[in-house]
Image (cartoon, one colour):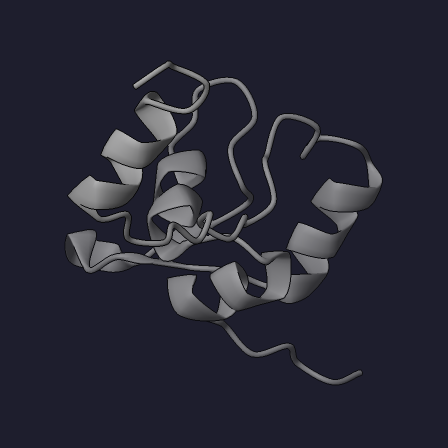
Length: 91
């Protein structure tokens, strides 16, 4: 039997496709926390990928939103805004 390594918050975020801040928030969620183990002396938390995969397959990750990309906005000049606002208006 091979011993599974402990992984960090960053590794879990990458594995789940979430942001690190969302993984941290979900770790302490009172309803559906991500399975974790606290280190002695309050030195943080560690995870096991197998426990997280089991948690996902049991359907306990139902409310977790996958990491989404931010919409890409293009810069709009004041002239473009004025032109678009005046479309269809008589001169």
